Amino acid sequence: MRRTLGAVVLGSLAVALAASACTTNTGTPSPIPSTKAGGSFIKVDDAKGPAPTVAGATQGGTVTILGSTDFDNADPQANYRGDGILVYSQLITRTLTNYYEEVNPDGTILLKLIGDLATTTGKSEDSCKKWSYTLRDNIKFQDGTAITSKDIAYGISRSFDGQLANGPQYIQKALAGSDDYETFYPGPFKNKGSLAPGIATPDDKTLTFTFPKPFCDFPLAATLLTTVPVPVAKDAGPAEYEKNIIASGPYQIEKWTRGEKMTLVRNASWDPNSDALRHNYPDKWVFDWSATDPVVASKRFVADSGDDQFALQWDRVPSEALPDVLGSANALARVVEGDTVFNIYLSINTTRVTDLTVRQALQYAINRDALLKLIGGKYAGSPSSTITAPTVPGFKKYDAYPAPLAGDPDKAKSLLAGKTPSLKYCYRPGTTLREQAAAANKEALERAGFQIVMAPTDAVSHYTFIGRKGVECDLMSSGWGQDYPSNSTVMTVLMKGGEAIHAEGNNNWSYLDVPAVNTELDRLGAEADIQKAAEGYMSWTRRSCASRPR
Image (cartoon, rainbow, N blue to C red; front, side, top):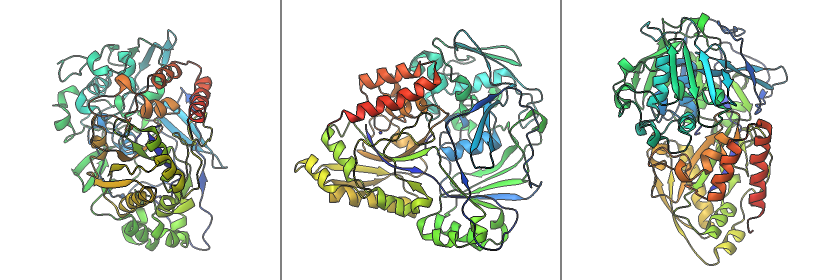
């Protein structure tokens, strides 16, 4: 999920996010509550609706989300940014399987994998090559029509089309048995009336999947928006469907002005008895991206007046506003701190920056301390020296390029040996913080001898732009988090080359393509023992990095 060898890892985000509150608090500020997300989960195959009630929650009102950037893609199957996935999968649409979180008294999270549209997490046969599902009763689209197995099969099938390549690609590649899934099946817009090979719908309530190779992670991949049901009769193609998305979750889109505001209202056809995960407590959700500066939004939370008492801040609390937040009892009562799945990176385009010593010099030149201070210091994140975040199963910390937090420009200069490489830095603009972070990276790299040409992209389409093969950027701002509890959703996505690199929709922004790396990632991806695979990803990476010249 968007937010490497070919990347400078800048930090693991432990983001302080303002959370909605329906009550006020007085007295001395208390410590920020902490949640501890792990990489483990349990399967629960008897989950039934309605979902467990939320203590203290009441029906009614409007929740406003203040953010700085609209979702980069409107079509569900193409949506791959964390905020978009959250809104679609929890509010607007449903998927074949999904997660339910329980927070224990000590702050640890118990992650439960459950059937969402399906009754269970799936039945496996033939060593994970075949999976079958039965759908729940009374699952409906917003117009009241029943959701059938064919709607889910069609939703998955349309994700094969190149126009939707910015979305998750796990299921497509698994059905194809290779990374070149578009050659295997080009999608239903080109092959009218067809479904992807390997998907069968024996009846309206039954769905089966047959893979050429074992795919034991399928119930996890099925939580992604790839499995959102889409009624074929309402789909005139991605460019049109994104203008009239058909809801299957508890809310539907009332109005959406791209780049400015989206309003969700209750979906009257959603049946809580069919849903073991969701509620529809608020009357409305309003997502407001109209010139909302994170500093201004944070100060509004501290003021805690009017409609802002029932609002969420989409962006992390910036450093300028942090003293106000930490000094306010009301603000602290609305803040959550804890590890997240996200790392932020400075991706190095290895097809353009081909000199290994130059890429190594970049690792030593970067100033993580400056970046952490910009985003709020210890309350906003921690420095990371690994591709994966601490929440990934099997995580082990190591540092292939040890340097002070502020960087080691002298080491970088020695690696450059008098060279002064000119690099084009494509960064995502849109907020003061992003501009400041980009400027800090430029300053750090230039003190080590690099010449940096700044190239801001479009804030909304940044990932679409840098995901095009042949993009003329040397360095790119990026971020990633695990899609489900497996390192295959991090390292394979960010480092796999060969057929995994397409004309559009790439997430390997380093465009790394090393045959030995590709082979090892394939081997680990086919490992049926989840624990062994988790250990293998990290131990292999540690050995590989340790063998690199310093």
